[in-house]
Length: 105
Image (cartoon, rainbow, N blue to C red; front, side):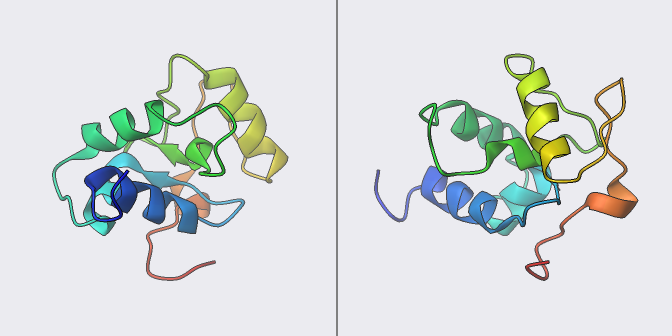
C-alpha cells in the first residue's frame, strides 16, 4: 500500500488512538484528511489482516455503539480488557472514553 493512500492515512490515525479510548469512524476520517468518508474508514478496517497491529477495535460509530457485526463480541472483549466499559447493548459512554485526536491520552 502506498504511504499516501487513503487507507494508509486511516491506519495512521487509528494507530494513534490510545488504549482505553475510542474514536468514531467520522472523526477518524476527518483526522485522516477525509471528512465525510466515515464508511471508507469501515472499509479500510475491514481489509486489515487478522493479526494487524492497527487497533481496529477502538473505532465505533457516532452513537457510541460497536457496529462491527462480524466481530462485535471480540471488539467488546478487547475494549473491556483496556478498561473501556461496554454495556449489554454494545454502547460506550463517549463522554468518558472518546478520543478526539487533539491529544494522545
